[in-house]
Amino acid sequence: MANYKFVFHHILVLLMCIILRYCEAARARGPLSGLASPAPSPRHSDDPTNGTNWAVLVAGSSGYDNYRHQADVCHAYQILKKGGLKEENIVVFMYDDIAYNEYNPRKGVIINSPHGEDVYAGVPKDYTGTNLTHNNLFAAILGNKSLVKGGSGKVVDSGPNDRIFIFYTDHGGPGILGMPNFGVLYAKDLIDVLKLKHKTGTYKEMVIYVEACESGSIFEGLLPDDMNIYVQTASNATENSWATYCPGNLDHPPPKEYTTCLGDLFSVAWMENSETRGSKDETLEQQYLKVSKRASNYSHVSEYGAKEMHKEAVSLYQGHNPASKTSQLTESNSPMAATYQREADILSMWALYKNSPNDSDKTKILKRIEETTAQRRHLDDSISMIANVLFNSGNANSIRNRVREPGSPVVDDWDCLKSMVGIFEKHCGPLTQYGMKHMRVFADMCNNGVTGLDMEDTCMAVCRKGSN
Picture (cartoon, one colour):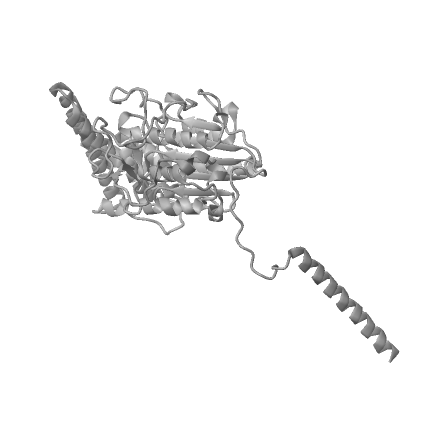
């Protein structure tokens, strides 16, 4: 009996300890601890736990026909600067041949919307002209000054608590982004740079926005979701992106003296949202949904990487301008009018032709239009014939439109892809920003075991015949 009392006593003591510990914990949690806690408000730019904010802005084109890309980047700079980012922490890549271009009706001024203010003033010229290269871009992202060739030498010298925002705008194609010097930027090379940046532990989180045709293909099947990098793209891996505020648009055309598109659909949508959002708590997801709605008639704005990050505040990456609460600007949530990216330059040429006051100028412009369309026919016909030979197919368009399983990269062997493009350009001429749309054909060659020797022989035969 004594033994039973002893055991019962110990059990009672143990139960009392458990009850006391539970009561103490409940008291610490408060009277409503049993209820589900509300979702925490997103952190924003003035959170004391934040590190330094960095940004890299890239317009990957040149020429007045591509006015919109540099306008996008200049506009983005102004938003970040007003949001509190320091000039020394914003690295700008743009060719800088637009503001004082002979065709620009307002010399020294760049606008990004029909009634927009000048966005060019004060923008730093970090990497312009021939210094706008993918090698300098990679060096800037990595924070490696020793790899920079030319330019200001400014790089993202970030630390483990810092956040980085990257915005790229230009032409693209399956697996590639345009750059004005030394060839295109390949997706695999960019992803390798991002992986190296992650490995060095020199950032906390990163957000990337990309405006380009097939921009989703830069990340699909390539970007891991465990690197604290969140991406929004203007389109998925198979769709075009679109220009806006273009000559001839019934909805919001540019001033009549402008003969070029002023902005890009995705870019304009996110920037106009950032300028007009009154709350610093607006999340990346909320911005994504609003931008998607405005682009909904043309492409599917897409997300990649660490998608859970979209619950964070936009202001963590773009800063926050308190003046936006009382801004006279109003954001539209309606779908916008747009023009196909790869036709925007032809549209610009025709608008210039229409606006030209004398016949000699019209003749020059018309010749340029004819040369551009002839070059496009050459590219389309050459690649179609090469594909027909190598794939023994009578329908090259079906090859160009062939898509791999969702979640797969465009190609497995990226060195092969680079080689195929190089062989084509050696015998058939430059691919150009228009020809980027054919990259899936070159990728299919690699994915189906076409050899470099086969490609060489076919290109020589097709393009030599075409030149006769």
